[in-house]
Length: 335
Ligand SMILES: Nc1ncnc2c1ncn2[C@@H]1O[C@H](COP(=O)(O)OP(=O)(O)OP(=O)(O)O)[C@@H](O)[C@H]1O
Image 1 (cartoon, rainbow, N blue to C red):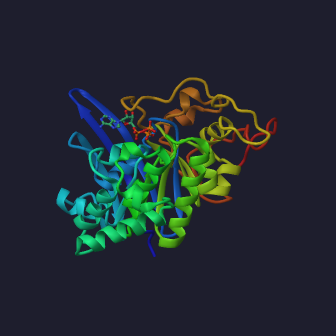
Image 2: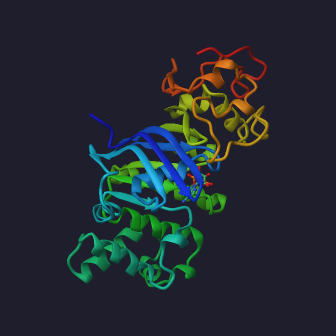
Image 3: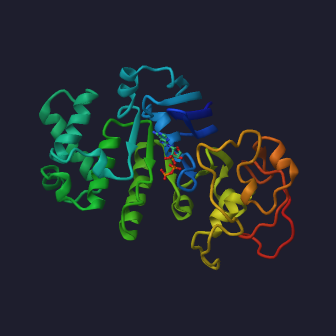
């Protein structure tokens, strides 16, 4: 059976006057029920735009190609009315900053009840209010009655994020998209919110698509990891394989830059310079070439294609390279 969410060769370009920003340059990935797909990459790699394409939230200056299917139904051709019916009901969104998704002028209980009303989940106000309290309680909110009567600014960041999660799962979506949901929170609260995602996913059996720049979050949460660089997928596969035995130099550098027992924190190890901008012309070559110490002539002559990795998943790097994370000082890596 096909996975619940299928993104196939997605391209997204934004035009403003003469300039075109190629935010997503041919991304294929999937997310399935009961599993967590983590999209991992640095700022600007196209993670959020990929997530927003699934939700149909790209705005008028976006040119979109490829396909996005949910349960076999193509979403890209749907008009705004059909798409907004699916947002909230079939697809829930938890944003990075819940302040941005919650109305500052309305009590949070009323906002959850409004989601239920918009999608006709309960007929009466009393039933919606009751379910809103249940949802807050399910999201680990202490004193749901008091919190429901509060305005967003009266709540801590962690509580606001719990409210946003309660609203996102209110209608029992099949797919939950969380875009850097813990980045704005302090470390202890981050851990609690991630545990909440794990529990809700178990209880509600959703597919979770989680966007993050944080390898620690990927390690904790991912069934599958998809690594993005410059609007493309450079590597994907089972989390344990990608995070412990990276098959792309970019993934290895990303892992080496994150604190991990025994590995000192550093810059993107061995990768000088910065990622190309979205306006850069990188068609027909690997986007990492200017930064990659292992690049050979073929990397500039051919488009980087994902090829199977023996231990699972795939990577878009045909060059044997020494892996600085798994085996410092070891010889060339072979696949
Ligand atoms: N509406 C837009 N108009 C023009 N360019 C955009 C628009 N939205 C995103 N971009 C550009 O697309 C590229 C990818 O952005 P995206 O937000 O997906 O990156 P990201 O990997 O999610 O990073 P971050 O975590 O910083 O959001 C960036 O270069 C960004 O400037």
